Length: 262
Image 1 (cartoon, rainbow, N blue to C red):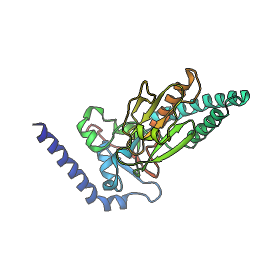
Image 2 (image 1 turned 90 degrees about the vertical axis):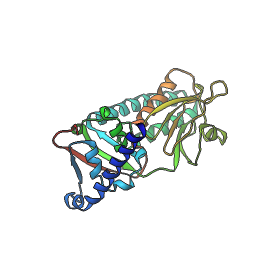
Image 3 (image 1 turned 60 degrees about the vertical axis):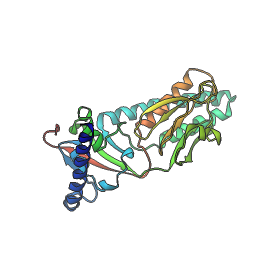
Image 4 (image 1 turned 180 degrees about the vertical axis):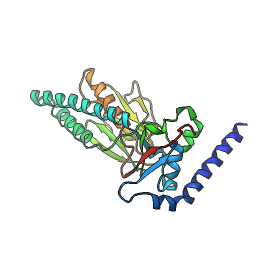
């Protein structure tokens, strides 16, 4: 029974893709050249109209909701204020030059982040298998998709850098080649492409390995003691979870119409 249900889901998915291809020319005529938009009564219906649907890599697709967008940007601003205070204090004490440079680098990268998203898997397959978790169409401001990345991003004592992704890459591999330097806390926050956050120990006494998908962000603490530094790590992870999943993203605004319960 379960296999039959899964088979039906994939048949529906195939029909969705076929519908999108058949309607491509109509969408090209309907979209404005400067400001394309999607009009649909459901999120699945909007994805059907998304340009280049057959090229979307779903772990790097996303949705944007106006209310969550405002909340995410406010949290970014709050974190920036905390980091600015930290930078000022480290600069005044002039005892931890490495930590000062790292904090400045982190703050600069956070300021350069672009748009926001709602963390989660919003692919048609996930929306169909989890109907009660579908967001209301009239709350969704835009749909977007990014080009699949070939890197893992590390935020640690050396600043922010990217490691080339290879099949089977794990935390242990990044530690082995010294691409990750953890702080006193001994744990890192891992943000996967969907925006889920987990924590893993990276010291001998608490080590727990984890696979790293392309586009994953790994955030360590500063090499300083104090309760504030794990909080900063987790705050950065939260900001990254609500940021776009990769580079080279394209986004189309959405306008809900009619009943959104389809």
